[in-house]
Amino acid sequence: MGYAMSRLEIESELFDGGNTVHEASSSTRPGKLFPKVDDEISQLTNLRSGPNDRLHQLVPGKQQLPVSPVRMLAGRESNYSGKGRFSSADRCHMLSRYLPVNGPWLVDQTTSRAYVSQFSADGSLFVAGFQGSNIRIYNVDRGWKVQKNILAKSLRWTVTDTSLSPDQRYLVYTSMSPVVHIVNVGSSTTESFANVTEIHEGLDFSSNDRRYSFGIFSVKFSTDGRELVAGSSDDSIYVYDLEANKLSLRIMAHTADVNTVTFADKSGNLIYSGSDDNLCKVWDRRCFVAKDKPAGVLVGHLEGITFLDSRGDGRYFISNGKDQTIKLWDIRKMSSDTSCNLGYRNFEWDYRWMDYPPQARDLKHPSDGSVATYKGHSVLRTLIRCYFSPEYSTGQKYIYTGSHDSRVYIYDVVTGAQVAVLKHHTSPVRDCSWHPHYPVLVSSSWDGDVVKWEFPGNGEAPVLANERRVRRQYYD
Picture 1 (cartoon, helix red, strand yellow):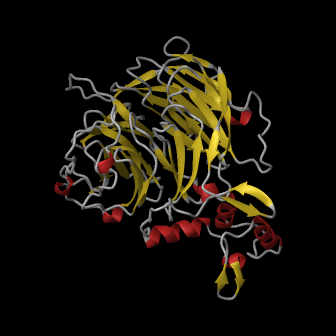
Picture 2 (cartoon, rainbow, N blue to C red):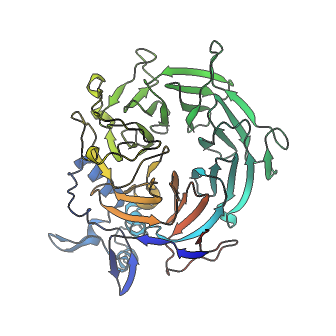
Picture 3 (cartoon, helix red, strand yellow):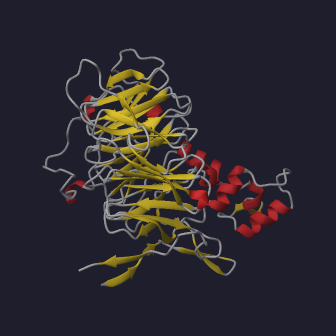
């Protein structure tokens, strides 16, 4: 039996005040030129994560970025803004420089594949779903203590997705079944065994006139907590009215599995969907011309889409694709024409058991309408997820994703640079989640490990209950 420490790969180290700290690199991958990103998204990102002009102006007409923490603090003390505090952009400029790359430290270790891992909206809870029927909810504020251990009911294959209600009182979970189950997270019962210690109410997404079964890959609560939206293996999008306790809408949305759905913003009017038909679609519930007709289509991926994440502004979102790319989209550039999405593959390939063909890596869709494309990670075997980094602490300056090669990748939205690669796991990382307020990222993998990466100010591990630095064990 031997041991190997977790490793971290960062493209560069920057020096600040004589102390070495891990920060975001601004360099792109060697030999690769990143096309200029759309000017508007670049400007929006800089507005959210750039410091006040007075702080990065050395002399008239000359600027320097990034601004050092010492200069930022000095500016705040001199009340440069007239408000006596940092602006939200100043805060993001400070916090986004320090990536959650130290560690990892163990949160949980199981013998079952981890499929889902997500922080709650306020960061106080963390949810992890496993193939072995378990869903665990950890109380982050209490040393990652297990607050609820849920044994899923009628699980088919695995827990495919989970979603917490906005008030964090309820959790829904899905599997390869048309029935979505809902659990009371706020109850005092720690061990939640379906219909033994607690009721796991089943919400049936199948229509009364349908006699066949299907699975649900993706589910999300609406921001008001009154509805659920889901994507399914029967090429459809479903909307379930929780107050009326009935299915309110079914859209025959795509021509293949709908792997991912999400609301575009807080209004709940726009829904984004991604499918194995290689298309991303936008659905406006306010003006359905025909029930199954989208507001627009976004073409550019050469293979199926595994996940979507909205920027939350009703305009931009990102998609992870089986063509081994993440794409950034502006829905104002959507089209109504899907005929341009005819197959361009002249080879046989299945991502579930085959590597991506080398000859396909540099192919580009002739009608690609995306704003930017990010490459370097691997999307194989499972529906790997990608996200924007938190608005509060980073101004959504980064995109991060799991990967089949057992790593977590972090990209700069504007430059496309791979700014960090986190190495620890020995199997695919299907999901990962960045704390909404702090430089903490949790990754979960098919190796059964759920681990936490941080950036403590002194470079040392925080002292929290039941935590230990991970030493990966290898058995003969």
